[in-house]
Image (cartoon, rainbow, N blue to C red; front, side):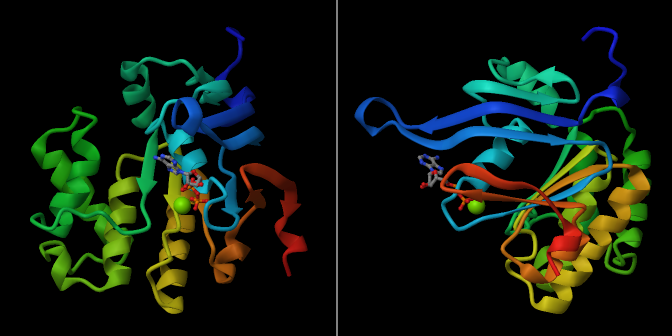
Length: 240
Ligand code: ADP
Ligand code: MG
């Protein structure tokens, strides 16, 4: 393993991953023997009914939740059994986009996007401002830098959230039903922007969706059912 260059290994590598919620009598298994490998630059969509474990899997991959059993390697680093500190480090590789945009109401668009850089602690104020402004231009909001979220439409807010997730050029972009609250045109715009930026930055995308209208952006679609991954190699040609 120690001689592996980063490019030799999948960006996300999940093996025999189980996950449980609760303790004692209430302990309930929600993920069963998940196996999934995702390479650099791949766009993978994950579908599945409500309650099938999609969000749980995404939060495990992101390091927002700690993996209990099996193996979960992100950029070659094992997260199963990782310390809190290692999880915090691992999260710096991700941009995470939530179903509800999760913007800070009291911050403007550009201030929200700057938050995506502050956790890294390596940029000056001026640099953060410049990078945030540039990223907002790239998502088509160059003339809305100083708007507060309540003055933006749903699609615009989600584009700010994408800018926040991508401004640090993360290796991995994780998105949990990012178009669920949007009309079909805004939903389309949002995924197009995400796809374009991720391609430019060489990011890997894992995106959870119920939205059939966006399946065509996928290189691969995986399906989760009752905590089990099925159809783990379906290519996008098979969707149509
Ligand atoms: P999905 O995102 O596919 O709708 P989730 O990952 O949110 O599914 O949930 C999978 C299962 O785990 C569901 O049965 C849900 O009720 C349960 N669950 C999710 N989060 C928790 C939690 N924090 N505590 C206990 N059970 C949970
Ligand atoms: Mg969910």
